[in-house]
Image (tube, rainbow, N blue to C red; front, side, top):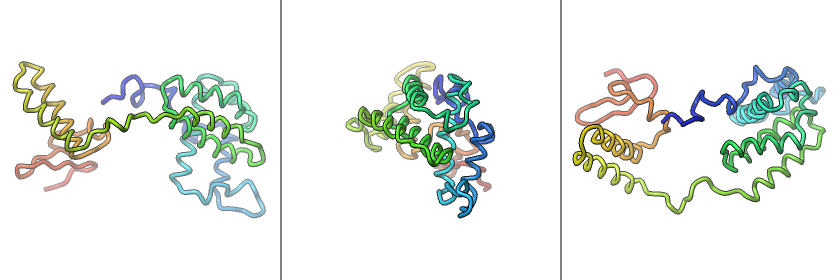
Length: 224
């Protein structure tokens, strides 16, 4: 459940640089774009009508691009954003993302986020080369998962219960491992949660026995 070598906090090169740490000019332009529209100042309001979620997503995506530059092309961070975001750097950025195992869907999302912020950085510049790069990625897009092999929840529940039943046929630590695996599969079949939420479950705090059943809760534990 740790996420392997790229789990939370394990791979700084995969972090998304937060807005307070952006180059000052990038941050200034983005913050102006979030202000209410001003008909006398075209630098303001470009993102004012977008939802908070959309703006946060764009910030995260652009932060990922800045992180890449910090590790692979630090001199570029000294440039103005319109000079920094070039076809060559975008190509290298996507190559980097692909090289560390990002799916084509992730590549497309990162390109969209980069283009959204690029338009804020310089509304008059032709950013079509980002779309062109996205078209190339889209042409070889493959779903991450083979949906033909997706199992139904009742099949997963049956598998989990079967593993728990069969665990008693083993000895020592293998009993606990088999039972744990079966319980985890059965639990997720009934209550699908994020891996991190599953790993954070603590018996007696957010996994509570009540009248012969179990209560699963997140956040502050209930008071009885």
